[in-house]
Length: 200
Image (cartoon, rainbow, N blue to C red; front, side, top):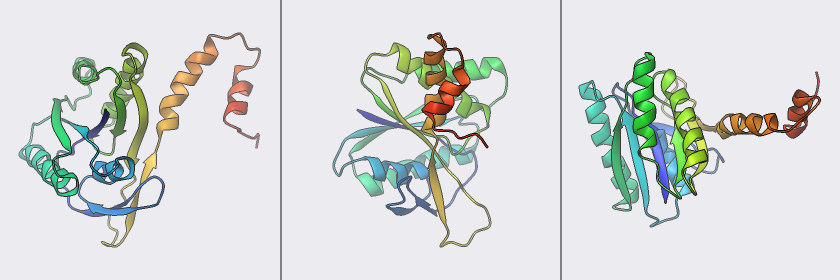
């Protein structure tokens, strides 16, 4: 089943125009994950949404309710919504707890999509690690994409904020690990060839 993860902001957010990664659709919504789901899901297809939040502010609780309302508006009852209580702190112990809680939500044959627009900087890194681990050890699980909305502040209401696909950064880690298993006289040149990088 397709499963969409999104980090929920701790502050109140409002509607904006988001353009999907293929630039085929513009969606006016509060949460970028809504626009991304629209670009991935077929009409009537059942899917899951997992909201990642610390739940330590009234705004974060209100944002969960707002997300549920927005998803219902666009998708009716075709989705289920669950939450992961994450620690938005920098300490190692807090990040490990977030890693474990995320990992526990992954299931066999999940097709995982992750929106890392919101949240403190360590949280997306924790997500990368948990996704990488899950893909290696949970049968059939696939990381389909990792995206974020490039939100530009102080723009007028007609401005379209692009949703950017950064899945290649996630896949790069896996590729480097694979390359390390093979003997190669010039691993960096091999990597440049794979990514078609030209010398400047």
